[in-house]
Image 1 (cartoon, helix red, strand yellow):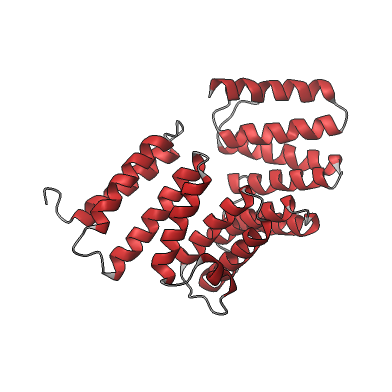
Image 2: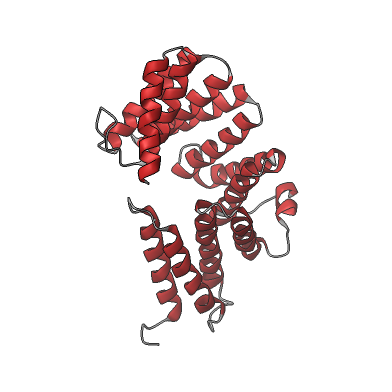
Length: 276
């Protein structure tokens, strides 16, 4: 009552926690505590049966799932995403949703499916992960058309499953489309374009094409350097994405037999990991 509508206060907590998560010094544990404090406010609200509050609660479960996954708590992440999905589709289980003939055009449904697909991928359940990402992509495309940032993210997630499941040609096509969408929405130097390039580099490594892999990894790393204002000598890197790209580039250099440079780059990655 002190803050007016408790549901508005709960949403304020949610926004605050999201900001904490995206700060350079991410604090997922603190963000998780704040998000969990918002749950009972919504669940016990007199407005809890209103459609808008049900959707707010579903979205909150999604944010909590992200925090659990960032903290490597896959069981917690799966539970929260399933609960968020249940609030949207009512009596359907996640597997029922995967097999449903007609799914509503609801971005929250697609977001929860993509989150569950990420958990299942990390657990090695590639069949369900692939289905989840394909269904999420299907819903996003019906809502947004062919080119949208949520579609780009869905393609990135799908491509990772395809690569890890050994569907390498399909993964390359998926990552290529993700990069094309990013270039169309932003420009060739945007971080999302770099992500698609590094993902293609990893796929080329799996295909035993180290030359192509190095070209993509170097492209992605250079894009990250510009996007995040990173130093050219790899000292004092700030963003984890840049470190990831440097790690992939080092692996491609090792595959090309350039071991001295690969060891140097891996040394920079190790130094960053130890410092963080």
